[in-house]
Amino acid sequence: MQFKDIVGQSVTANHLTEIIDSGRVSHTQMFLGETASGSLALAIAYAQYLNCEHRVHYDSAEGGLRADSCGECPSCKKYRQLTHSDLHFFFPNAATAQVKGTGISSADFQGEFREFLNARRQVGTLDEWYDFVGVEKSQGIVRERDADEMTRALGLKAYEGGYKVVIVWMAEKVNTTAANKILKTLEEPTPDTLIILVAESSEKMLSTIVSRAQTVRVPRIKAGAPEPNEEFNTLYVTWMRQLFKLNMASLSSWVDTLHAKGREQQKRFLLYAQEAIRDSFLRNNAGLPSRMDFGDAKFNASFPAMITERNIELLNEAFNNAIYAIERNAYAKIAFMELSFRISKALKKR
Image (cartoon, rainbow, N blue to C red; front, side, top):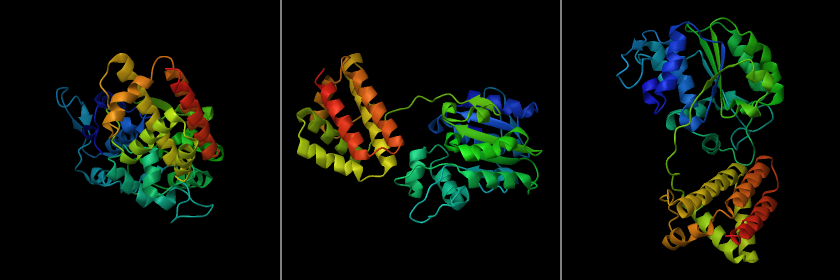
């Protein structure tokens, strides 16, 4: 990955190349920002630039970048394929149909993870990773065995010279045991070592981890319309119509459908529905054009009027509570039924 391939982050890229060119590379850094905005892609491009044998410098007029890796040296070619021997990835992992047991770690999914990064151009989300590898009902974590393997990898001599690089994606998913095991490594890494923690929220990480890393903040890129999702569209439209009439038999059947899905799919649907509510509110109250098409012309035209200043805060709170419950392994049927009652009540306050 070269910086020129990352959309909308030239300012951050220039800051990163300046750090390397000035010789001020901190051994432990945290790239803080959404993966969809390029935080992981920037981390990989940064590591590639650090190990590039023929760095290229531009004038400020060329694509807004001051410098980039050459993309052609042996190191760059291996980074482009994510096959460099001194590049190590650690990421949330969990049991799947193919990989089972209590002793799993990132090592069991290295091939799949690299394939995922290449397929998503290194901006895939955590939910997309879970779908890609087949994690269904459990929450992935970076665990104790990952910490042991990280320490072991950094203790070895670099195979190809240059820097050994460890990238921990979604570092907020490092569990407490693993975090405590890598504290000394973060504070006193071996020479010519770079550890990059890529995280979306430092608030979910141990303060002792955060304090040991130099933070690089990755600004958010304004998102466009959510990608069309026919299944979610159907579920959402059906749900809202049931809640308006509050048909308990139909609602119970709908809840059973959601309950049968994996926890990550349930969370993704809730986030999708919450964004749909927000979109309706902006259309109805701010006169903004809708960014979402639910595949039902009548629903598209009539439903936004249901979301007003009187109920938008109640609806947001209800969704946030439900997402929180699902993330903490609450019983899905109860969580969705309670959310449904709260939405039905809020819609009547319009």
